[in-house]
Image 1 (cartoon, rainbow, N blue to C red):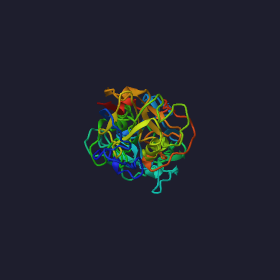
Image 2: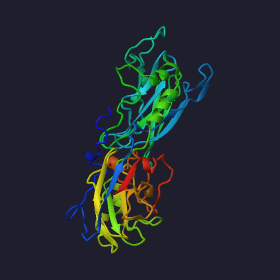
Image 3: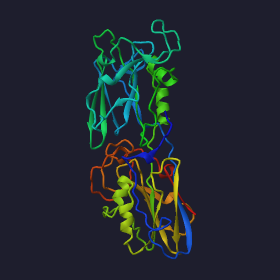
Image 4: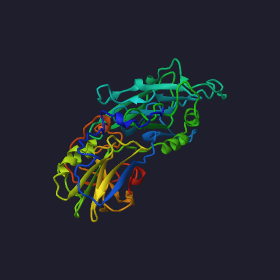
Length: 411
């Protein structure tokens, strides 16, 4: 299920970068330098199964069970972000059973059609009723059978699912309604869980979340199916949920003076190519623009393809005493974010430069949840334009710290 993770280089939709490199050894400007250094960019992200996850809370307090449930006629909503190819998985107990639970098809509720349009409205056909196989349906005695569909019951008549979508934010709202009132299978629904699997550029990181049909169950789904408790599943989801990203090849410059030629914090992007890196990982325009900047002494590119977690790229640079270096690489699973050095760096320095690096918003595209936004290059989209000043990325999203994504060293 998790094999071939992060084959990001195969992306036709995302951050594939076109580099027009001239001259030898990745150098655009050749001068007589006094020293050769190597600068390395490593993607140190720890891959996680899910980009988002959470709880489907109950509505009415149910005294015998000691927690809230969704009674017949009641509804509950959840909101989440997703891009093309991603799906929503959920699970909640069929309360009037020994070990049955509602869940969507694998890998989850389909959210976009084949044309990339968001699916909205009634999606109740996506819900199914499963027998956990851990208790007999009559006596409730323990058994050990594979998870299987419950025959003879139409789950969509008991639970209604309705999707709404906001294209600007790429956020969905799912309304879950218990419609079992008056049926032969009237039942409360327990609090449940939901998750959206991370997408690595070619496939979902986890294509069978929560359980595997026709296989034996696990402790987390068993607790939901038998008692409606979600503590174990929430713990597991929390440990396996997080924003991940690829990086674009890094543009590195050697320059003189006090002003970083790549970007200026607090100023609107000047149209010389930073936008193309921040939105698509394409360094060509900025690379060419910097050739005409008088204080830029050398331009280099580390790598020629997106940098997946666990991979690294390097380039050699030529420096003189007094020179400085600056660099930029795209936070690949974003709309318009980039990593760059916030502090000035002596080109003759050595060691770890990560602490001098920050994550910036180029202000050229409206932000969506990282790795779950349909206008992101990862999903073949184009960010919706904005015209804001370059700024440091804030805490709107639970972004990993710089040192948990990128390591920059020079030797």
